[in-house]
Image 1 (spheres, rainbow, N blue to C red):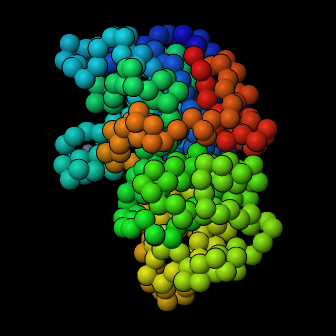
Image 2 (cartoon, rainbow, N blue to C red):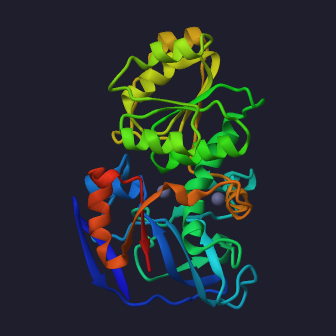
Length: 345
Ligand SMILES: [Zn+2]
Ligand SMILES: [Zn+2]
């Protein structure tokens, strides 16, 4: 089968690998149909690492995917061969304190699809996953929507953690890549129509405004805190940081109101931020960290299946599997107004 591997910094090769097979009672063999190129995959491509997670070459990345079930172990009852399935890339042990506390996403023994040293990723034709990772959506979603459930579930989780009460809550999102757009779409689906966008790429700003953002500011062209103050003299209740950028964090602290919340979703490439503690302390800002998602896959499926969220609006480009290197190059360089690139098998 075809597999696409990282072989060095900014190096990627299309190779032939042996097709995997199920070995345990709980295994599911999946023929992949749609794969999303994620910002984190591109971090691994560009830097060979994210924080303490270091790639040992060659390695297959990719974790946003859907496919058709081809074969199941004897103990599998969640899916049957032929099902289209959403794949939750996070595999947990079910036994540690975190799992028992309902936090499988911070499982002590968590293994994640396409994460170096854990599970080889999905930029390939077939993968084997435990049945708990499979969420059948036959007849409800198409393959591309099913692959987009993963990033959408992170946006949904970020909004859930923010604990927003009241549709008049004032919010903003810094950075509208796929995760920022997922947050926006979830807020809008929940009737929170006040969400503003701060984004340095005009084409992304325009996309967010088309989808329904209340306002958009490009930090390259204005003083964001001043402009926000003009629109919202009391400043904002909840600010989502979805870019991983230090400057965005600095801006976020300035536009959140006293007693407000800063929700950190973006991944800082160098693993560290500097916070203005004077501002944080005086305003008594609550900082919420978002680790992937927890129990939001079902809601993401429901939101897409019911038509409340048209998750495909974030997709700008589609590539066949053997053109994955071109897709990564495009996303890494923000070429051709790319937002979400999908690999179609
Ligand atoms: Zn992702
Ligand atoms: Zn666990």
